[in-house]
Length: 500
Image (tube, rainbow, N blue to C red; front, side):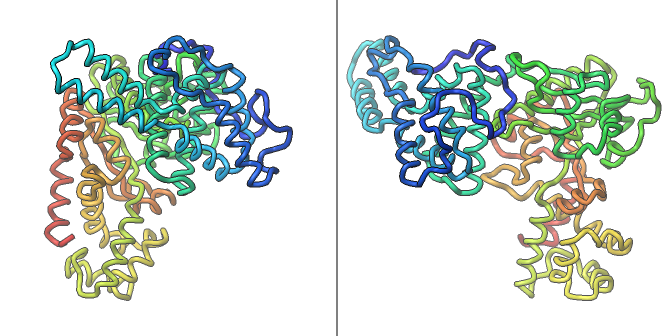
């Protein structure tokens, strides 16, 4: 009951591909009719009944290793019942009941805590104190953890738990369930999945044009950053001067969990179209043409594995693989999107519009030039203009906005924080990995998506292999961002004009 073995048998993890919501997972059912067809009252009663049967009671501490595991059918009942809930709100309701009703026994925690405190105030043998602390740890384990542990032993059980966590995250995002109990259950699930999907269980696989068709299909369908349009597009992304790698679990070779695309270039790329649209210089790779490795896309295929650090492991492994293949390779960098920049900028312009006396975003000369082109109040009119992608058709407007949008973007990436860390999730990811915020690139992504998300800007996060460890420690510990002179200069320019 206290935990689970990190060396789960491979058969217990098979298969990892998440099943469709219909048909329902195999296993005995509590009702012959779909749960969605039942009334609210009967559904609530059914939820309570399946939870009562499926969640094992916590044995007394003295019996923790002698209590038999619950029958496999009880866990299968929960899996089957959950699969029969066809609506997000219904699944959220069941998860909420599980989190609130089958968590930690706070009375036991208080009692065991008092015992530990009492022993610390009295001269006793160390063994007595250690056992009291062990009792406290045991009391701190929520009951539903036992359910998750036993489900993981079912065939396809881990796959089910990955999907369950994805549902939980979706319910939280939709605010269908909130509160500390749900956050605690999410943390417990994340911790368990982190052990099952630790680096020791992951296989690095490279995708080439000669990989099995099903692998190429899965990889192409999972590309979330720069969508793959057709087979010729896919062939180019795994062809000469390109690399594609993914992690699979040791129990399911060929099943991508997280995918990384790499471009092998002569220098650090500043434009994504040159990577995803232009053809390589030659059909056969010439090693003397390769001086930089650009990580231009990383995609997680299972939403239930968010926060499990698969992307971090993958970049570090691929970096080592590339160093082996190209010992002379001297530059490793991402070419990353900046999701959220346009939204942040429009909000900033909106606040400036309401405060007519503030003009800190643009210099006087920039404001005059912008007014001449767009013919209206700077902040109010620019907010409308940047809400569509048509502004890029005006060469004059693109030229005038170059300097102010570059420094605004630098501030957004470097200065806007969430709990002391970079607000932008992509920036936070690379900075946690120990990368340096190296260069902001103007008109680096001219695709509709790139213009809508970040006004066409992209950023390079540079990976210096010998410095990633210390950089990561500094960022996570003191929350200081390591940035290049270009970025710091743009930030200084922003601060000079702004009082934000």
